[in-house]
Length: 170
Image (cartoon, rainbow, N blue to C red):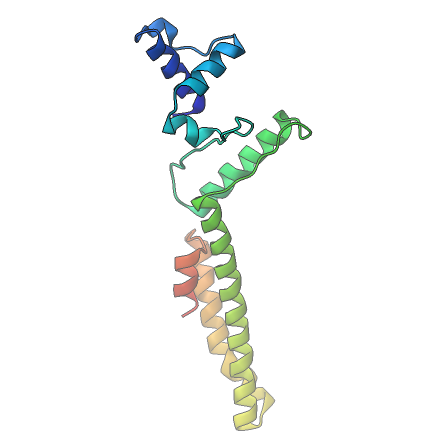
């Protein structure tokens, strides 16, 4: 339900449920009357009390990060092409935005953790066995296993997200 749907429903209700009155009136004063006269949680969910800001909410059909990124990019492109930046401003918030940000942080952290682990194993072997070649030889199986793991994930189209990053780093 949008604010437009809510205003239409209030208009219809005001006219005793007449289906022909499920409209947004051209008269701004009448529309404002419908918005301000009927205190509704629906209206409060979509408009600030001063009626200067509106909230547009949508629910994503799929919960994957790639889908959310695609939807956000499409929305940003649409808003950039259709809204005057001097008059309107837009911002994206919500669970999907938080999940995308957290996913990015975790994936970047896991990748850096893998790199640090490879370097640590390399240095420990060099110090313990006092041989540079031994350090290189010791990280080869670890490095090849990590590359094979991520290669198989890429080949099978398994996205690198929070759950797969945590498992893949093991």
